[in-house]
Length: 227
Image 1 (cartoon, rainbow, N blue to C red):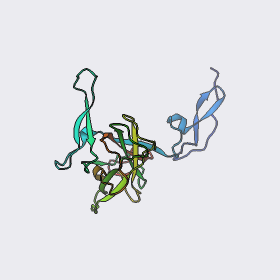
Image 2: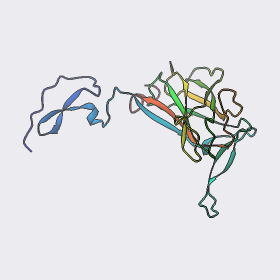
Image 3: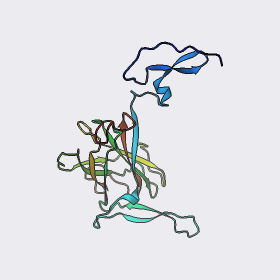
Image 4: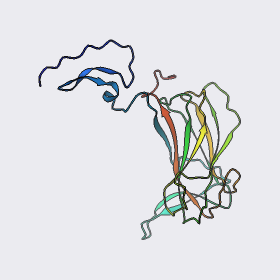
């Protein structure tokens, strides 16, 4: 191709996604946006990543345990696949904890998503209420009293359909002041008694897993300990 003269651009110590840097994008273009180079829509727009917490990683307390039972088989007597089944008759629970990754945008909200399926069809307007109890602390800070959060409305708000993949989302904390590496210590449960919301679905709610969704503002941290 013919030589293309690179346009003169002022030097910059830092750039954002909408800034342009010198380069050859085509035979007639002499500038490229930084966001194009990095293959992201914009460095300044909100971006989310997830922490996946699968049922097999949960710890049971030995008292109010959900049943770890077959969910599906091949229809001809195979061992099948197993998941935790949360009962309607009593509040059943499991436990987990995690640290926030170094790409977390500090002081922003985080959202815990319960991914689940109804064991059978639900009647008109029936709901499952999920809950989480947790305490959070940054490194060097003191863990406070645990707080409780509930959600009884799935993102697909309809009469429950057997084996349909639903999501129930909880804003676990407002994030203000929290830094990378802060620790969540959590108890998840089905609010079968309706203490914090409406739970009137009279069959098992089967947990597929948990997702913690969080905002990111970079590929990681600038140092191993801080942004």
